[in-house]
Length: 403
Ligand code: HEC
Ligand SMILES: [Cu+2]
Image (tube, rainbow, N blue to C red; front, side, top):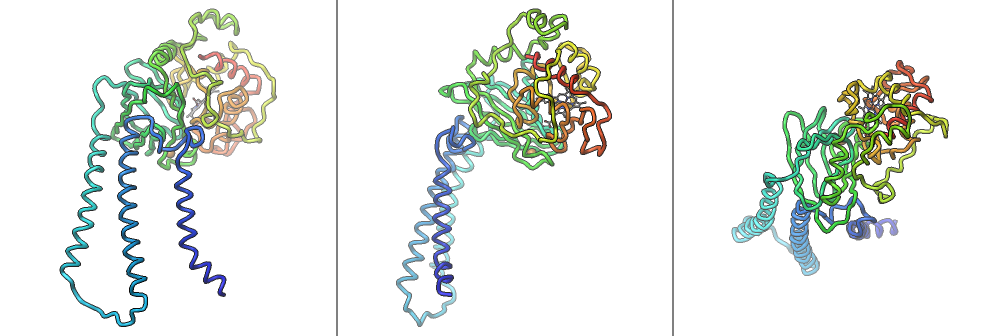
């Protein structure tokens, strides 16, 4: 009995200690806390972070003063047994109306200032990027350059980027914690947000998330943002503007293709430089098997890609048959490091399993289950259009040529 009441008395202190420890854990190095909002790398992030600091400080002052007064009164009058009730005290009432009003003014001024700053139209000359939310992946378009990509966004440091946010279906929310951007993508309206990545940061990659619940695979709707130098960005854009290298030459085999393509692919962030926090480490569902070491032929893969229904949903620029817009643009899929809303690494193993049974790889996915004999969890039957393992290996070999 005695023990439990002592515990109850200790509880507030324990809760407070836990809170302090939790808050203390919220700072640190980028690599340690890669998704922290407390080390902003843009002016947008800093204006929000500065406001947070002010509010935290003001809140702490009010908290400490209030607790001190409370503790003082509790101790001072602890033996007072003749407290008497009073009714009405004009001076007190004016005081406890005025003090909060003053506090609110101190909070309102910096808050309103930050709201105006973060809602202002982007400065002229900003790089325009259209962000389109889909269940459950992100489409990025650079209208000035005619470039479309998915789930991996490149922005140059030092140049303001103005995002125009829309959605193809339900409400999504675009969030890059380290860069400060967080805004909803809603129906029938374009929302804007702009930011400038600090020039002092070395080429880096940041994690992005959908942060508005949007259905079965909401938590699998991620993306990466690469902040690169202006030169690297120009090279990346040039590479992405080119049509798929594969179609630049006769589709007769790997070597011919690469030689015929001639131009080196534009810059893309080197895979070996990907920090651990940006590499997806989700294992594929063990139910989807694929023979290890099965090699494919890219030319056969291109044919299978056209016959297998892929072109109905995917664009590969340079291939006049592949103009689908339901799924991500695959023109330069081999320059991306992740698949399917950034949840899997873009490797042979994962790519093959993705094509084999996307709906088991990602619940609810609009990409159908396509592997021979595979069970489609949405249609509740085996895949109607089906590709055997060799065809899938061929398609993988083809996709891996698309740089
Ligand atoms: C009915 C439309 C549809 C068909 C047919 C289809 N896909 Fe997809 N595909 C999608 C959608 C939608 C996604 C995005 C899924 C997600 O991330 O939630 C996708 C994603 C992908 C991705 C990952 C792209 C990325 O950037 O993350 C690859 C690769 C892919 N599909 C290849 C194929 C291939 C190869 C075929 C044919 C064998 C095919 N798809 C057929 C709709 C389709
Ligand atoms: Cu979502």
